[in-house]
Image 1: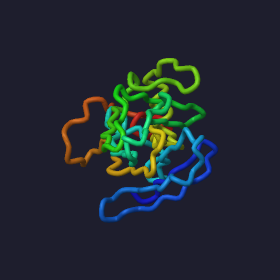
Image 2 (image 1 turned 135 degrees about the vertical axis):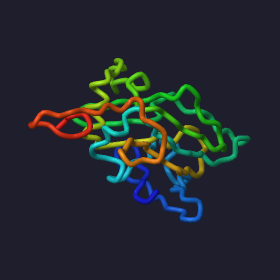
Image 3 (image 1 turned 180 degrees about the vertical axis):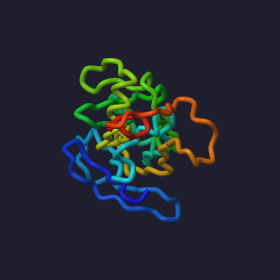
Length: 191
């Protein structure tokens, strides 16, 4: 979890700390203005770059909004839960189920085109679009703020599956194996 940080909509960083005993990143947001509606957990460079081998795998995470539900924690407007961007494209995922106040939320999204939409236009994403973004992933953002009256936010157990020749998991049925021509290389002959 080292390197994950919390950002406001204006990309201003909000102070957060790594709790090594629980392997979570935690931020106290009580001092933020009440008008704050959007906060994202932002992935460190170790999650970025060429992630073509993650196609078909899962992005998983645990998030929580701490507060006192009886004091009026209300769900904020519906917004994307995960944002991927790269190669001048931004893709968003909206989870079918929203988190509950003061409860641990288990986020899980498979990296296949049917789970993503183009940010801004809400158009469907093609396999090619997703592969292009994964080939040059420059940002991975996970929604952090879901409720008014939240006092603290946490993120933990983030996983981004990827296929390897030496992996210990089961077969990766969605990963292609390409025989690249001399001008190309990479898992999908993308370079």
